[in-house]
Amino acid sequence: MFTGIVTDVGRVRSVRETNRDRRFEIETAFDLSTIAIGASISHAGCCLTVVEKGADWFAVEVSGETLAMSTLDAWTEGRRINLERAARVGDELGGHIVSGHVDGVGEVISVESEGGSHRVRIRVPRPLHRFIAPKGSITVEGVSLTVNEVEDDVFGVNLIPHTRDVTTLGELKAGSRVNLEIDMLARYLARFRETA
Image (tube, rainbow, N blue to C red; front, side):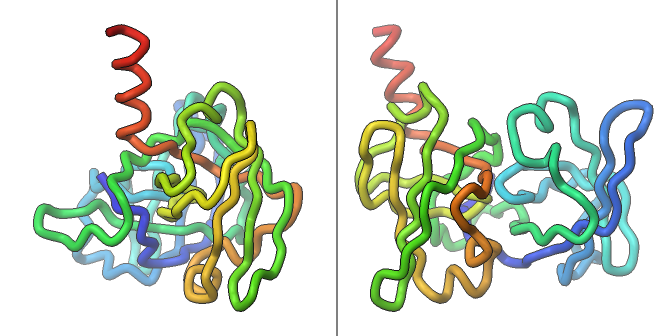
């Protein structure tokens, strides 16, 4: 589990096809002596398992399912990515409860200045739009955000300068593809309603 509060922006150092999956090596400022092989780390919202590590990098292997459901299929060397280590019992929950299971890929429609912040509008694939509500939570590229407005299959979020500065969301522009995870509570409420 994660909170959607990014703690490092890493960089893809290499991409390689293996006989099983796709392998990414990620450069990071994390203290790797505190990260075990088998640890879970959120990569732009995708929970991936550390399979090897070096002095300032670690490796993950990504399945075809994850590549098909996320933006990871388009990752190349040099790409910057939001990273978050798994939450521990007792950690501050500054964002919301995030599983690290990407539900789909959205498309940025617009990015506009709004005072000192930026309003980002994102089109979400159907039928995920039914899980998004004003003032609810959503994870975009691994970042916990509050939904400001929803209009059919487009929702808007507001990015304060701090969020733009310490994550990759400051790089978004119209046409950018983003990993989305809907709020876990919304998912369970919708399922309950369907089956009750």
